[in-house]
Image 1 (cartoon, helix red, strand yellow):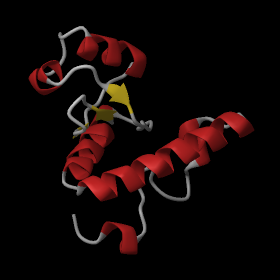
Image 2 (cartoon, helix red, strand yellow):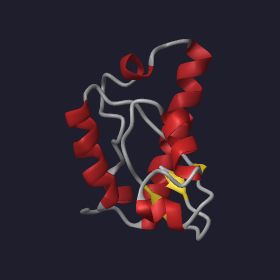
Image 3 (cartoon, helix red, strand yellow):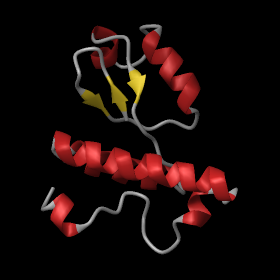
Image 4 (cartoon, one colour):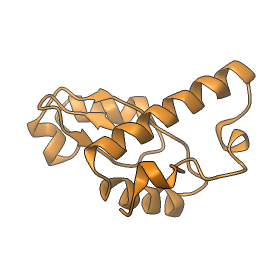
Length: 109
């Protein structure tokens, strides 16, 4: 999830987050980010497959801004825990999907 220069949140999928951010900021990524550079990384999470990542991307794009920011905070907290415990991202979240948010936070997307 990126924050563009106009404050909007952009969601996409990639296999290499740092490389993709550089591509976006060089003006060679999506047309939207190209028009609203520079973009900054807000949060990210790992997926088991491209298919799962695409489903997650669709879900995140359907959320309100407030719900996206809530999800970003959870992702950032999860990555900090993963680094501290040296547990791979996917293994650290086996009890629920990485995009899980509580019903009171999510409502219906």
